[in-house]
Each structure stands twice: as C-alpha cells, then as structure tokens.
Length: 319
Image (cartoon, rainbow, N blue to C red; front, side, top):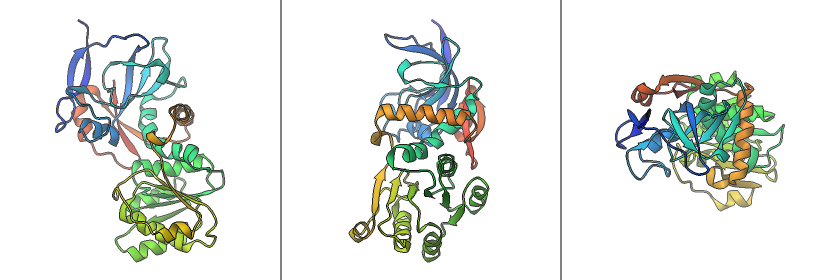
C-alpha cells in the first residue's frame, strides 16, 4: 500500500500530529492533486479544535481547510475544502471547485493572503452596492482580516478608508498602507465615540469585524454624527470579536438610511463565490495585496499550530 505524510487531528484538545496515512485514490468525478501549501488560519484552527460548524464529527481526520495544489497537467490551483481536510501530500478534490492560479504565482504567499482577504473582498463585491470613490470604515482593522480589508477597499477604488482598532502601533502602520484616517478604540467610551464621529460620520460602508457592545457604541457615534441622514449607510457584519449580539434602537433604523447585513458563505450564492475566488486569486497573484507567509514544513505541524502570527503575517505549511 502506498503511503503519504499528513497532519491528522486525533483529538480536539491537541494540535494536529504528523502521521503516515494511505495515499488517496480518486473516485468517479474526482481528481488526486499534489498539495504545495496550506494556510493555518483562525478557521483552520477552529476546525481542528472542534469549534467550527465544519469540524469533523469523527476522528482522526485531516487538518487544513484550503490549499494551493499542483494538478496532473502541472497547472496550479487554489481549493477550499472546508471540513474535508487539506494537510496531506496528496488529496482528492472535485475538479469543478479548483480556482486556476496564474503561472509564476507564489503558493505560500497566495495561501497566506486568500483567507484574510476573502471576507472584505466578498462583502464589497457582492453584499453592498459599493462604487469606486465611496468611503469605508473598517471596524476592527488591526487583526489580519481587518488590516487586509483596508488594502482590499483601496484596491477596489475606495476614495477614503478609515481604520479603527485597538492596537496603536498597528494603526500607525496602516496609515502607511492605505488608511486615510485611523481611530484607536480605547476603554474611554466617550473618547472612542468622539473619534469615530469625527473620522467616520460620512462613510458609505462599514466592514465590521467586532460586533457586540463596541459596535453598539460605534453605531451610535457614526449615525448621530451624520449630516445627511438620508445618505445610505451599509453596515456589514463579518466578524464577532466583541460578541455575538447587539442591542439596536428602532429609532436608529427609522431616522437614517441604514442597512445592516451579514457577509459569509451562507449569504452568497456558490457560483458567485467561485467567481469572486477567481478574481481575488488574480488580484493577489498580480501583487495587489499580500500577507507575509511564515512557513513551516509539514513535519513541524505542531510548532506551526503553536506559532502566534504577527500583524500582517500568516502561518503557512509547505509540503
């Protein structure tokens, strides 16, 4: 029996382990591909910890949620296999789900960047009627996805981007990476509200990675400071670092042209999502937006799981 190396989740309380497993075989309508790089994203860790809706119900199971792969014809592709696992030297995929990767693209850089960039790209491209020249507030901009949202908004033509987050040093860096204004979210709620009102009163779109009570504060500040209450404001819920729920006054909805909507895999048609995957792969490969990969070999998967990404960095396992 032919064997390959892989990273297996054997317990939700432990990191994946380097193991040898039988090589996969393609069934009808499937294809076996070589895996080149896999990102260790927050969702990837959550899946392996049993905390994600796509976590396996039976163990052991392959770790990993996405990959850059090499096909039999030598071409590269990007695949997202949420729940199926990708951290093995070879995996079985559905050929229809492969996003072609341009020749010469760096697999590590691509797999490091796709996941952080995807949320804001999909939100601005599919969930709101965003147009070049409009302004965007990124609420929670100092995490990897939020930082990337600043770059994505600029790449898609935003006329002004406001970055709001807690990490002062990261905000200062974002000021040199495309943010036109920054707001530090501090424990003093009055100071935070005043800063948000000054910097973001007239934005057209909010990409919200925070939610919870900090978002309640931000909504009150931004809506209360708007000078044109009939000007549409789309508030897109993407992440929940600050909590899973908010309390919102009905008055806020009645007294403003104000829409709240979410953006995620359940909110976008699969065919549209595939199209956006392709567009985003092309933009990343062209150098428009990047996250710095921090590479680990497959046999050091436990060390990779223990590594804490610095701002602008993403752990990547190379095979």
